[in-house]
Image 1 (cartoon, helix red, strand yellow):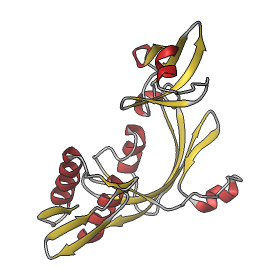
Image 2 (image 1 turned 180 degrees about the horizontal axis):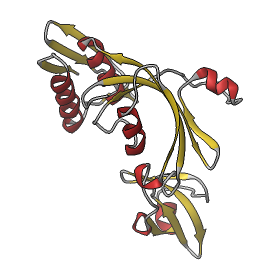
Image 3 (image 1 turned 90 degrees about the vertical axis):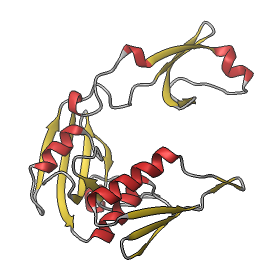
Length: 215
């Protein structure tokens, strides 16, 4: 696979022998995974654009449509090593002021970072902001199902991956992304950085020349 090509893949990811994520319904049934509330479908990978972890993308680049394989990916090419700099300690009273109850093992949002509470005591809360899979070697089963050739469908898959909600409409070489997202009755516009990223990928890797947002 060449950079800029878009393929649809199915996968099963394991850490320490336990499945942490998968896209294929048959594999879920095979492994006795609870399917309730989960949508199973192939995921798009725009090769060279970091849609998946580095080690998995390298494997996909070396595969053909219809091929499947099992691979081992070292932590360095997955979610990186666990870094001490990504662990912080906070006064417990700061959470109490905000009416937030913190418990060991739970995830918590601090600013724009999400972490896991790893200890609590003596008036202090220790939070680990490393990715949950940091420091782990991973195992993947991966299958390349299809290469998307049609430019409108390719643009649609980019839009779905990057945004996940709303609609995309086409008129010749122009695409319009209709985004009407409300939360508690308040509408929210997409960050300009996100819009620029979607616009750049669609115009760079398809024949679509213009992308506008209808918010």
